[in-house]
Length: 65
Image 1 (cartoon, rainbow, N blue to C red):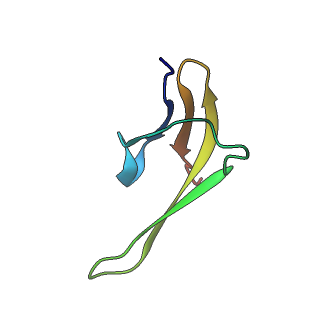
Image 2 (cartoon, rainbow, N blue to C red; image 1 turned 90 degrees about the vertical axis):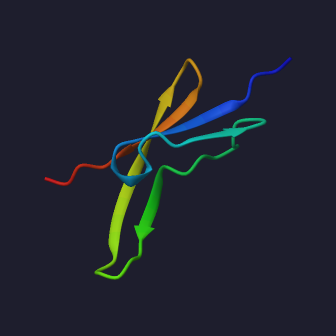
C-alpha cells in the first residue's frame, strides 16, 4: 500500500484544507494565490511552499509586513 502525497494549507481562508495526490508533483508551485470574490472588494492571499518531511508539503500564508 502506498501513502498519498499530502498538501496542507496553513493560515488564511484555506487554513485546514488538505489535498491528497497519488504521487508528488514533479515541479510544485512555489506560491499559490487564492482570490476571494464576494460582494465587497477582491481579497488576494498568497501561500508559500514549505516541505514537510512526514507527509508532503505545506503552503503557509504569506504575512505581509
